[in-house]
Length: 142
Image 1 (tube, rainbow, N blue to C red):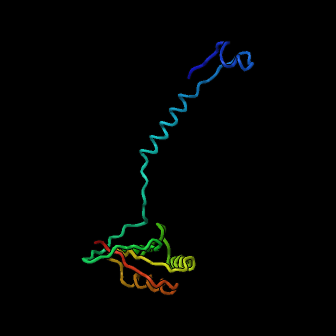
Image 2: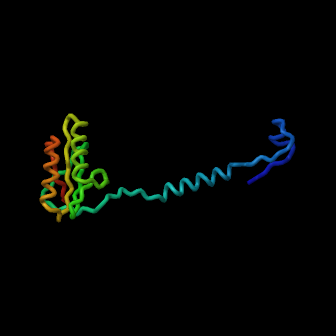
Image 3: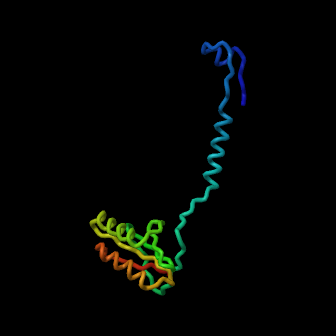
């Protein structure tokens, strides 16, 4: 830091009798360099609650719905919506709320692990039908 203490400086012109002026430019420079460093080196991950291994399909159409609700089902039967683990009751509440908020209709895309029990998949599809969702898709690897 630089201190300026001559009497002909800025402080003398403003009417101050004596004083030191602190030059903040180096401090601001270092602060901005640290900010840029942390922004460039930070890693932002889109982590999910669990991994899902999708089954492979020979014929596959890409999912094109923009306002689709994606429900993940793990091998153990755990449910995830919007990167949050939910139980079957909360899933029903979320699906019904989504259907109410979108009068054009909601699409539900299910990402089920290849080892998921068929019973759990049918249970999720049944919940979607209960809420009035008519468009459903099951996602797979191409």
